[in-house]
Image 1: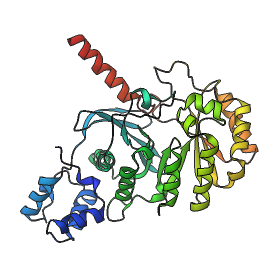
Image 2: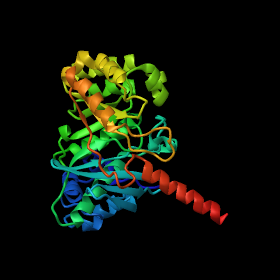
Image 3: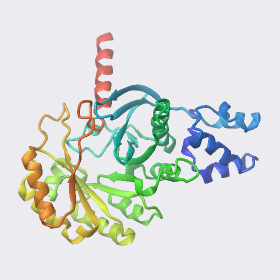
Image 4: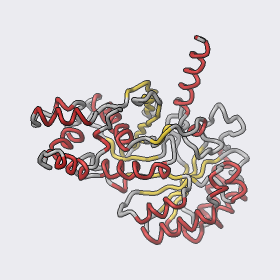
Length: 360
């Protein structure tokens, strides 16, 4: 059986583990310092630990369980990593550079079962959830890559918007958030972390009840049930009116702004009537909401969808703003590489299948 990644343990969990093994709990502070401050990649580099303590760690954990399969670098500085897991599965992680810092988009599942009809992540159904250690290691591997440049860059922001539905992997998601947020380690502020969900209603209630100031984004993408069900099959079981009730609970409980993500699809959901319907849907909560309008990144397999025209995007934006809905148009990152989430992975897997077929 494959040993778990030590990155999957929170600080308190590691303290408890050391205590159970007959070690002093302060060993957890030493190990976390080596992992997240000094950022070593092997237990043998932890020179202030006794040899038997290092052996104990090696017997139960690994540090590196992800291997870099390939990387794409965009002209705008965006870097897309394709990582190979210990079981051979592939996942994507993206580093984006902004004026405010370096933001990393992480994956939470191998594949996705949500089945949004425009998303490359759902081209392959979910194989399994990622462990919290595998999610943390995405951040660490990107940070190690940045360290190698010698520029002193550090990961300052995290978005949980990669392959998979984060709330469908809730326990590992929360462990991951506590690890990267801990002031004993990477110390990435909760307000610099955003989790995106397609709308798993029960988990929105659970997330609202967490004692955590992490930002929440909801992938809405349509202003009515008929259209949303057409492009997002999750809406059939979890319709907009129930989703909005969960959003209202979150806003009341957390008193924190929520973001609605809205990918604009040419002629599908980008017309003025759609913008007006969106206004009606969220106008009662506009003081605590923000709409992120997202130009669509075309996916080869979904030829029925195209990026909205600039005029349509601006018209949509103007309607929202004139009605007091705060919004913005997301700046495209990595447009000269496989920018769409899951696209690099799906292309590589298609190549692998073609090679296997040619050999047979």
